[in-house]
Amino acid sequence: MPAIQNTQAPAMTEARSNTAPPDDILQEMDELFEQWREEEAHVDLSDLKWSDAIVFAIFWILFGIVFLQFFTRYVLNNSLGWTEEIARYFLILITFVGSVTAMRKGSHIAVEALLVYLPREARHWTLVVVDGLVALFCGAMAWYAYQLGALAPGYMVSIDIPKSYLYWAVSGALAGVTVHATLRFLRRLRRREADAAHSLTID
Image 1: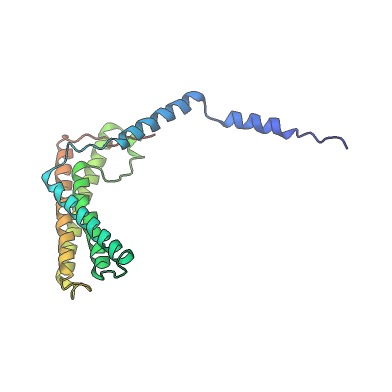
Image 2: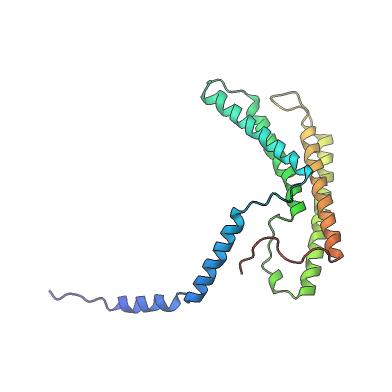
């Protein structure tokens, strides 16, 4: 039987080579990702403030509670009942208290795909509006969290602590976020804040 020749293989190979990006674009992408990896590997602790110690304290307390839960459950076979609930509450606290630091440093996630195509003046006023809306939203959430704390009934399941304390702690954290968001808005309005991303932008 004569061998069947595959006449489509060269055409497919040629089509793939035509659709592949040029070498200079691939090299530029490799350089961008290498720069991104270097920035991600570098942890800058020079701009930490005394207020950031609160979130570090909450983190280590959460670590101790989770370790205690693991040790008592899998080593002593006698798990402490309160560790699961309290760890959940501390995880909520570290999220909201940590957001204060993130707002101060300007490291919250943001969609900036459209900003790079705007003119400089339009980009500035768009960011002014965004910062103002963020400050208003966080302030409203702080007020609603305070009201929820006043209406929260009963105590925690495992320990006799009112649930309202958790809502008020979240309200305080949101108030801190509101302060930093308002300061950012005022700096942006006075053109003392750079109208650029704080992290590496890949476009």
